[in-house]
Image (cartoon, helix red, strand yellow):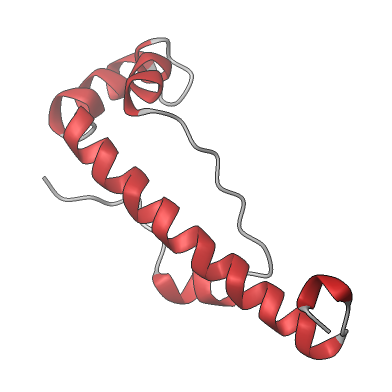
Length: 89
């Protein structure tokens, strides 16, 4: 299945802030079934074709790995500009 709803890494790299909203795969599938993410027909297709628990777990792991990298980069930039006890200086 071809995925059309993607965000290039370069966009994430340029973002000033990234907010991760973390849900277990089962909770996201439930939200899809309830029509809270896509309209019902589109949600059913998405669950059937792409949003399996395995795919959602893999996507969640990627997001959780990416987020600390962004946090570390942001904190390092802040500490370089403004020394503070929180930065070890």
